[in-house]
Image (cartoon, rainbow, N blue to C red; front, side, top):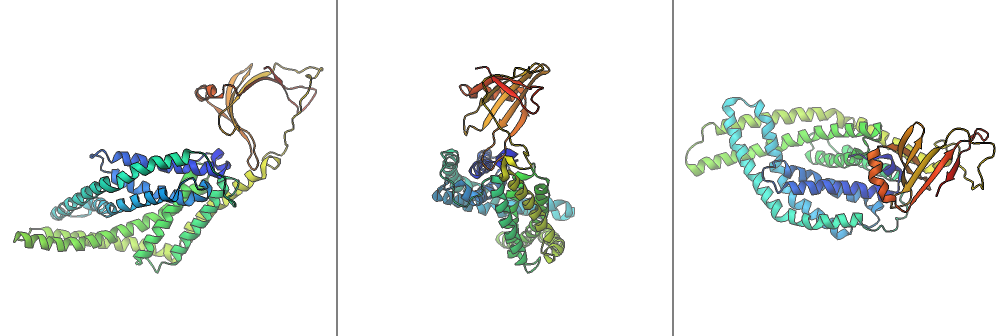
Length: 428
């Protein structure tokens, strides 16, 4: 996803609602995918979307100003907890699929045996999600949509003037949380600490991700954090597979005892898989040693650079129209007549209409001897500069009917005798 400059420079409650609704749409799509039994990635998509949605609601809560009731947030958290047990079998199935190429052909029968058991657990986990988590989500997600699109309450005290400033504060706090989690890690063998780092890194990426298209520093920061998270996830996945394979060896012994006969090739194959898991885990921990020894400074520095860029943009926006962004403030006068000395070349004709909402956004068309051009404008407001940007004819045609009753038409003259002045002659 991508947040455009208007959202970043706009009020925090608008930006927070846009971001939360985007995360809600991801969760809604993932929930809908569960209905298709052939969609093998549906559970994984839901397991990814729910933490992102819950994390967004927590991070954006001050800007949402109580729009989301605590009981609704609790219902979403309960649904996420109900779905969480599916994560381990899904992760094991994915790890086994990736390990197949590293296993010699004589041992792959054991992999198939274990993959079949993992697949059965995935199916059971999916059934449990459909029985418990999905009904909760079908109730909660429409209520959340209504809350996020409903009337807005009063902004909370202390919330910054723009969404970019709000995000900058949140990013700074989350970068600090990631650094503290890294400092708490005893080393690459500290599995509990690695899991804590992974969670903080995920939350940080979720905040940086919408800014990728708007800020190169945010894209670089997100890339750095994702790199750290990927190394941690590889380590934890190998460790989890190691533990699962040790359990599988016990299951194999139990299966042989139940049948009363050995299962040819099963134990050697599982031991070969265990060796692959040990090698992967050792390699992943070696790759993590240097970042953890250096306290992941390069990662947090990249994130702080994104924070600094965002804070700089927020400061520029809050300075308003009288600063370097607009060094010459525009002044307007109502005059009774056009200059008698003449107005020079043929004027442009401009039609402009204001869209429903906060009365700042408008669309229009300028017709000049050289042709027509269409535009979208956002008027300046306290703490936020205005902007005008070109749009396509099709977008104008879609928006123009919505401005009915809120339009002006005028000719725009530039007078040679009054340099720096322009005269708008209203036609209605």
